[in-house]
Length: 450
Ligand code: 2IT
Image 1: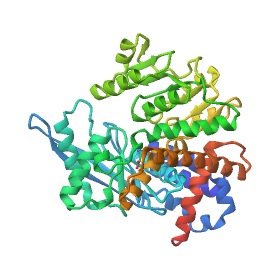
Image 2 (image 1 turned 180 degrees about the vertical axis):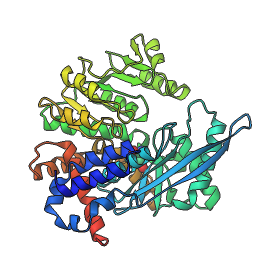
Image 3 (image 1 turned 90 degrees about the vertical axis):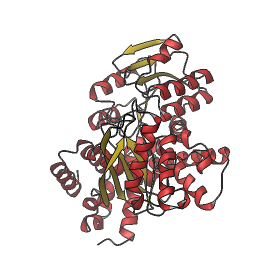
Image 4 (image 1 turned 30 degrees about the vertical axis):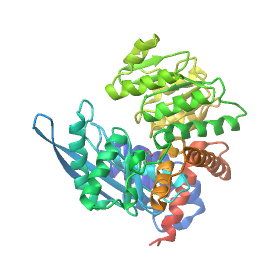
């Protein structure tokens, strides 16, 4: 390890001991970029890395809202505008009980390099709240979103910061947030947020984009291995928007998702979650209760195993974690490696602990792809929504899908080429970090290195 890179990682560890997820992502990204630092002594001279690990701006705010019984509650809101070197800050809002500064910062840091990989001019950001949407009524969600935007609206804008959804923030929440933004500013502001409903200026394919993009990326990996998606059995975790998009696109291309998991346990459907009836049932199930996937097993008479994960199941070809961060720890990684599955395709943001990821990467029989490349189609289509809004155009679903597919092909190619350039072979994890980092670093240097 290069001594400058090591010194920055050590400093982050020392300064941010209470932010484990943030430390983890810095270590993961920076351990890949050593060859670029060695090629560019000026990055060391101008101390680029210490600058990169400090968000350009990050703030908190309080959100006071009233529940349906008239009781008042206060939550914390966050926005972390991590790096705006290549475009307006861009990234989702996460509403989840466990949201804290470490989670927001890790997501903002990852977003910076992911957004660079899309090839589009968007900087990295993330935000959200420790508000728990589970069990809240529609009216409570509306009041919370209005209060959230009342605190945030001064600090965002189409050229400043363009928020979107993440866990706990879907089309409904974006609609309520955008409505409040318009009420407060009296302006449409090129849509200001992405992931809007179609009637409000949203883009076709945005809800499906992350999952579809992940499958398009997967197809590139398979092509590289002279393999095909046809007939493949895929295990996902989660059954949210992203996992759902994977199920749908995989089915369309002749593969099948045979495992999915939720907070309550996992479902095994050997026939595949691949019919319209099954896919629609998941949407209904999720809308009613986002914490349980057992009803799927009851409805379609398949196996449900409570309180555990399916990682390591032997009848799987492709593993795609698409739920929370650090879902796959070392213990699960060992089971996955032993299962014989060849492809480990991360989808959720940082779904693998660093030791588990490095272990999987060291397995000769496996190909590992990193989330910041695989899930970049979501934010990529968000950037296409920004383009459509600012040009006052609406693209057809086919046009958006074509752009998305092209973007995923390019991301895979750029990652593979960056790894090859530094003699690392087909290392998609290092390649994505190298390609994303190079672009952000170049922009930072162009804008005044000191
Ligand atoms: O993690 C992500 O890339 C997102 N939540 C989407 C961000 C966006 O601006 O569409």
